[in-house]
Image (cartoon, rainbow, N blue to C red; front, side, top):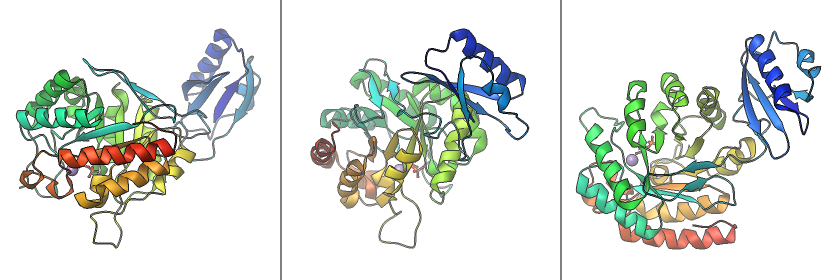
Length: 344
Ligand code: PEP
Ligand code: MN
């Protein structure tokens, strides 16, 4: 349920409500709206008597949230969540809400060398990106495929940030690696294969780094929102949802971009929605067209694989754009963004 405080409720009145929530064994999550404070109450609501809260001073009303996700829901927070990331050495980036520019995340699937990531960082930055991607720990179908350079790769990413001012997003695959990856990265990526790794969701929820949560390839939007709920309920409210294509019967593309997810998730949730056209299509030839569609549909950003020499890439070369092709993508996306009142 959510407790909607009266406009002008005092800090003391809010404090009393919070105490009462904790007293009945539930957890309060405060959301400061433009006019009023809304308090999300999570936990097992079955034994709770709502009238106890309705009678407290400063409370306007108590409203049940009927959807299974509470903190991720628009019922809890009407305004779009805006995540601010300030990379060391760079300008603040605001992600979410039409008033802000698009998050343009780009870089190789995997960090393959210091030189590769630094070169790519410069190229994507010149093209208009504001976040650098690159995997240090790679979830690979085969145990014999390249698994990533681990901490060395994290250090190279941090160097690339130092040189370019780009923020860094990289995947974390297990709870024990959250402190290490958080030390180097500005955004923690939870990959599609780990969307329902609940121990990992709890761990990134306890960290204070923003999280890019990718939709599982066989997960519904509701499951994605429930996964986000794990992170939010641990106190980390900076979550971005990422549509990266789902598995269908179609074989001409690697996955099928569920474009519906963009407006549906934006309607159901206040969290920013990012689209990954690279994993959605699996073929670089389609990445730009699908990016245009994602921005037209209302995405708050794109995460695109770019490699200086895609044919030599250690992973996902077939879906990686050359830096030149990324320039063309940004130019085209900029025009679409303008048409839907966004900026790149
Ligand atoms: C990736 O971003 O390189 C990746 C492995 O993505 P996903 O988890 O969406 O497959
Ligand atoms: Mn990849």
